[in-house]
Image (tube, rainbow, N blue to C red; front, side, top):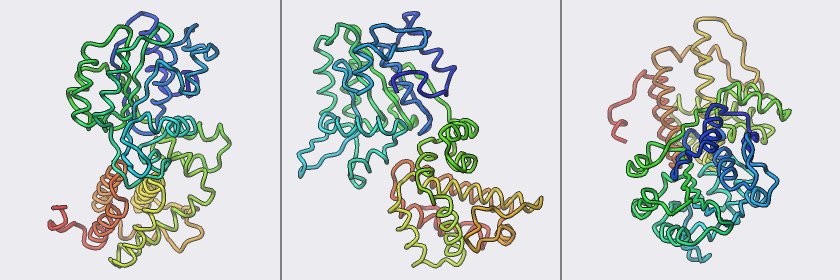
Length: 383
């Protein structure tokens, strides 16, 4: 995770970052942003390691010096990690990153594609409110007033700055605008649109695009993961989702089973079964729920195409009674576009940690109207 070679993605962006370092053009405030699960977190870590490395090379940090070894364990004394946390009086948690730093280190080392939902599940606090509180800004300002341990850079590494409380962001502005000598603030964001303009306007931004299906497929195949092509299609550029599905041996069969049931209960608007299915999905991981909706998008696209050219039954549905030919009779280019738009919206909502149960229940009702009546009543659009 501290080497730019740890993942093969974003070669152009990594090259520009390394070149800026050797040209002495390091910005004191840098924002790395882009979709979830695309490797930008590892790249930000590799850049941090390069800043602190005792023997930097043209490919990045040496990975063998004392500083690099500490960075590999996320224990470097001159790097202060800040991330969304929650309060919990029963466990004496006041909402400071330092209180959960050991758990966070373990979480990101085991999964460098970690999402906020993954982090919440890791500390068993999915229902808690996670944010970066104002007490964090006071801690950062205090830390930055000290001299660096090794005499080099001091780095504040903020993961998911979109979850900064407004008061926290305001207290950080002075250090962003007028930093202490040899101080660098690095932010890694997955929801750029939710960042405060006062932050983005003061940061040098580097955008990391979504991974291609081919990049995800090659990564999975390199690890000898079966069904790499199908998983790459479902992941939509998110390696975290791809690996999560791969770890569940029956995941694809389960997705097919859920989709078959979902279409049946949505079409008949069977509310007890819709609620039950939504509850079942909410008990799964957020990544699974999003993968299920991506799977649904792929199946709807296949159904539309089958109206124009014959296609074989999808083998993933082999253990269900789902028939693509029958499904294609109720899906056409007009309602398919609307269906996919609603599902895309639901994916976005779930990615923003909205309740899976509520999102899926609402979506199922909308799917019913689109499949059976071709449109959604205006009354539903108020929600």
